[in-house]
Length: 237
Length: 272
Ligand SMILES: Nc1ncnc2c1ncn2[C@@H]1O[C@H](COP(=O)(O)OP(=O)(O)OP(=O)(O)O)[C@@H](O)[C@H]1O
Ligand SMILES: [Mg+2]
Image (cartoon, rainbow over all chains, first blue to last red; front, side, top):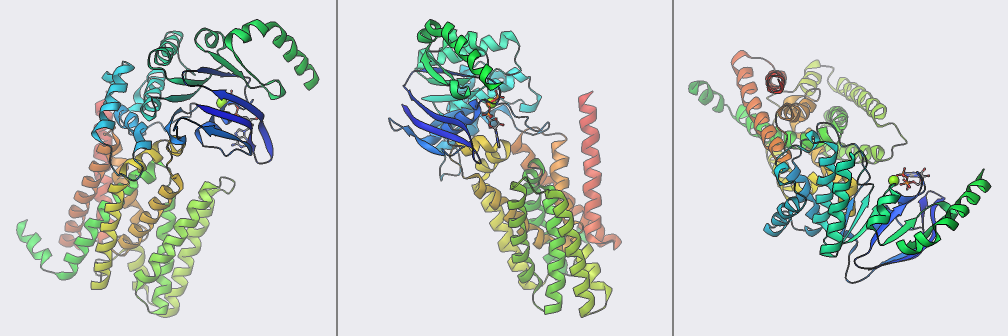
């Protein structure tokens, strides 16, 4: 679905992601892990077209367009009193289908409602976004991402600030979408344990120690990886 | 009451001011929602001062004020936007600088020409007599353009205002919409400035949206109600100014202030 070849991205002259190659197939559930500041968000931004690659190439296949990737940005405080209803926000997920049309079609509106139903938040439809709890807000953001695409979604730390129940709730929903609807999922998370439970692949971004593997390979090699990363940290100090 | 209205409308200059004022109130209030939410309201304030400077220069050169003010303010709006995108330069202090300089240039220019204070007064605080026939036509065309563009781009403007990154990832050229917003604002300010005065026009942008945000929590409702609030306040304000002979701009702003306080109190009561 997406082929990433020797990708380098960064800021000004500093490379954050250096020479990363991997292949994302339809139906994959990839967890992106790594320490703070490693470049997970940067990688994801390159994927959805928010950041230009410095070198290397991201090739989208199977008629996938850049703007057909559902994106849930890493939490950024939306202004306290922004007046916007849940429905307005979820519907704006269909933005990529507008192109030069000024208004959303009936199909877009149905899709927004459908997605709200799928995530069990139809009751929040007319609520004001900023008056929701953190967990409810994240679900709305997920709904918006799902409206943008039913092929592939990219989630940047979707469970930040959620209580354990809402967290496992959200994970289950995402996993369900992946298994039932064949949705390709790329999720940045700090929660390695759950990644192992649901994901098919793991992408560890950590400087020179970056690797991409299937979950079973990862579990198999886990012990050696730990040793390696400690050695890496030592040289850093 | 009806008698007062029919009397008011029988004066061509008041009729002109009402037509332009209503259109400007509409444009300013809907653009205001976006500007307030994007924290761009200071830009509106800065632009109105630039408009004053441009009016002053137009007086000296003896050309139609709108012909100089319109392009100048649009160019400055464009520059301010570029600067505020580049976070390394402090936007608000720069706006303060530009505001003061434009005021100074305007006052300097006007005093060169006439040495009389009426022009300064009219430009700063507005005058209901300001609209010539060609101003009227230009104003109507511009306002209708602003309204049509806002409606056409409504969904995209909402998305860009709410979450610029998501909009960008959806393939929207967010820069273009930011430019559209600031150009539309520039046009609205220049047109409204003649009646409202350059010191008061920015309140027409800020007040109605803040007022409606006290109570309404849905973007579409906020846009619609602030347009209604703005138009109603304008009509009440201009009528009062006619009856009591008070300055038009100031009367309208005071009505806006009163409505804001009422809405604010209602929102407090609602919360308890
Ligand atoms: N706008 C920016 N300008 C310059 N450097 C940046 C910018 N954003 C991030 N960086 C740098 O790029 C590196 C990677 O940042 P990134 O946000 O991708 O990290 P991350 O892995 O997502 O971390 P976290 O777990 O905290 O979200 C960091 O070292 C950061 O300092
Ligand atoms: Mg991040």
